[in-house]
Image 1 (cartoon, rainbow, N blue to C red):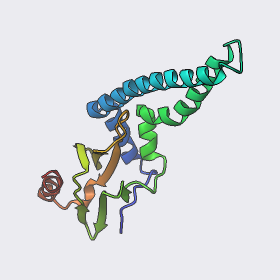
Image 2 (cartoon, rainbow, N blue to C red):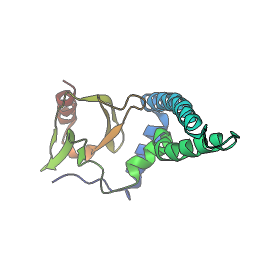
Image 3 (cartoon, helix red, strand yellow):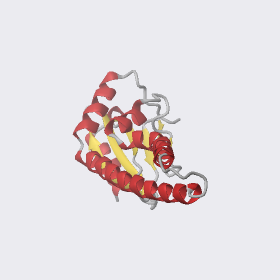
Amino acid sequence: MVYKYSSSDTLYLNDIDNFINNNLTIKKIVNKNKTNFICYLFILLVVCYLLLFLSTKMLWKDSYIKPFLTWAILTIISFFLFPKLSLGGFKKSIISNGEQMIEKVDTSYYYSNNTKSIKLTKNPDITILEIVKLNEITFILISPKKSPKFVKALYPILIPNNLFNSEEQYKNFIENITN
């Protein structure tokens, strides 16, 4: 049986909120993603402008419509991509669907809870970016090594600390997934 995270648990929500707002690794990655994304948008703008310039050269003599079309295309594209690059967007992606938290992450890492035994499979295509023990949960941040070039994908795995019977069991678990 796979553990289901419940969004109604305010202790977990406070832990997640504090972790995301105070975590330097996440902030660094999110800020780098924003910078990369702005560069990507600029390149996309130039490409769209050139395409529109070439395609409209014969159709319209005045060039007022070209910038509007270019910005319309970029706005539509950025509307779908940009929210995921902010800290708020990252937090929403964690807590928006309270019942879908752990199950499978990119078919590589998953956590299962069978009579308090925990298994987190290893995969060479995944990088563990951060492991942080909070009050109620352990937050493991992973990223696929084959992320898109301009944005690093982040996947959170939340494990409730009360599943570990002792501190030694917790340490063994962390050693197993980081070796």
